[in-house]
Image (tube, rainbow, N blue to C red; front, side):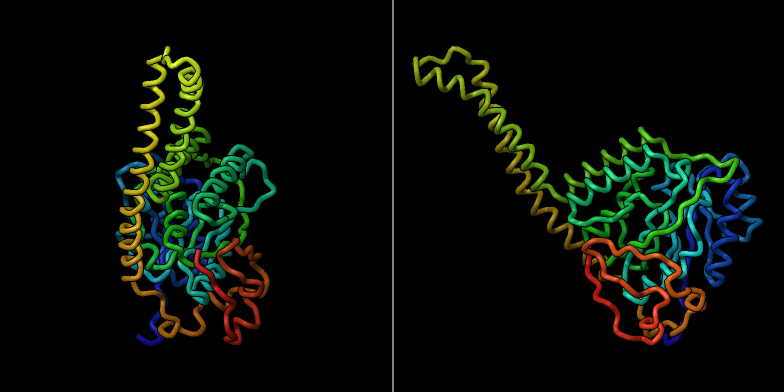
Length: 360
């Protein structure tokens, strides 16, 4: 197994991207010449398939509509050491991929997220930017980590990440699921800033600001319920408990003063809400135990897949020589990884000890 070639797969989910898919394939072929490039078509009605084939990509199909369904199929079908996932709209910088892969391998990471940076308003609309920040903040508050761009469509994954990812979402909320999976299992992850461009002429976004934003928010709430049941149901219990006390306080005061209970229906409602509060808290306790067991099973499944062994990979992969010192801006994600000098640095080239890597 020594010095076996690193198997890299570029995964491009596509739906009606005839104007851009060939450019994306060509760009990644140029920057990752040894990678296999897969285009998964999701019921396109234009010439996406023909353009992808002409560009030399391996084209496969997923009939179930939705990006989440495509990612589930890609992760299940494709075998590789490193997976590069990118949207087929030609808005991401393929030149950042070699450095992101070096970062993943050299520091034994499971995910490298490409945070979008642009000065073009049309490329990253204010509504999308605000929604991304809000949803990213909710996930950061809930799962104790802060990535700058949780909804990025440009990521590098290890094999053990891909083969342990359950992929339950069907649409654009899958990006949230990808992030939460890494944070929940405390995988080592990192984030670097990457250039983000406007869509070329003839290409249109498939993302609905409000519809998909609501779906993503709903998915986050479900993640909180599933992964943090004690916190979720405790909040519900506190709400019903305080409401019960608020309704009961004047009735109790009048009972102490007169010995009468004039508003019996209100008293019954108050007691019912208190009971619901206690039941909610009990559900949280029970589900927290269940979640703990489920988390242990997910962690064991994750560990069951071997990590990339640096001893079995050539010391100088072809793309490593393409990474220029300081050419890729690096933004360490809080509580993720501290990397002041990694991409193309003398320390990396000389094989010096790597900076400390922390789990997510």
